[in-house]
Amino acid sequence: MDEEKLHAFVGRFVGDLGAVMHAGTVLIGDRLGLYRAMGDSRPVTPATLAERTGCDERYLREWLCAQAASGYVEYDPADGTFTLPPEQAFTLASEDNPVFVPGGLQVASSVFHDLDMLTDAYRTGRGVPWGDHHVELFAGTCRFFRANYIGNLVGNWIPALDGMEERLRAGAHVADVGCGLGSSTLLMAGAFPASTFVGYDSHRPSVDGAAKIAAEAGLANVRFERADADDFPGRDHDMVTVFDALHDMGDPVGVASHIRESLAADGTMLLVEPYAGDRVEDNLTPVGRVFYSASSAICTPNSRSQPVDRALGAQAGEARLRDVATEAGFTRFRRAAETPFNLVLEARP
Image (cartoon, rainbow, N blue to C red; front, top):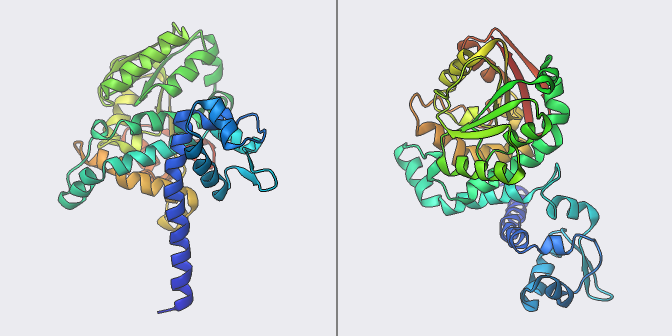
């Protein structure tokens, strides 16, 4: 045994354990509005933060120390104050920005709620349907991915598609498959009022939640319906979108085939998937660590709960996704754009 490697690994484990324990404090801060209360980046004492939020001062003192130890806030020992820097405030205090991060920790927290169910799945080989997970998964997924969509969907990804931005501005018909709570659908509907959008998802509570959000936003050009990805209704769509969902499906080829059949002759499938290379060794990165871990607990179990059980996983990579599109009958396929977190792929009949 290499003692130096042993100590290095233990040190890494301490870092991981600290991160996991700290994640709970981030979610507490998010739920109670503590980051929002510090969002002006002015120094606060525990007493000041208690006055602003109505929370208990002694708990807040401990919480602020945990934030300081993790580098989320800065501590000034001269006067005992804590400051949330502007950069951290941007990522923690406002949901309407492209780098809001607490939703990712909500997703992670759902895994801990579901450990017994997941352990049984690993032992037996059974799948775990999306709807069987803890409710934190649904809200967390929406909040986590919505930030990236805010930063990229309307401004970068749609303009990267061949002629689609012009069609959407003129008036197009779009289906958003696997829409969840509708963050992608609602962003498109708000940006392109001349077009009509229908969000489809198999999870009834998400569909109902998305419809409520749309009504509150006053968006008349969007609706949401419960439907499976391989038999949603409608023909001659100008565009069908699938955001961060195809890899979760048991029969991605069947889904893609149905999408192709539902498109107009000159229609487009916009496929947004987690960023990944085509080889395992390409994905042994911080981003790959996040997606492989999420896939182990959420994506692969969901696929295994469905017929066919192809189980692409969240690190499918462009080559396997191209194979899916080709098997489904698409003749044109290209990478239209990318981010550190996503591959943006365009497929046409």
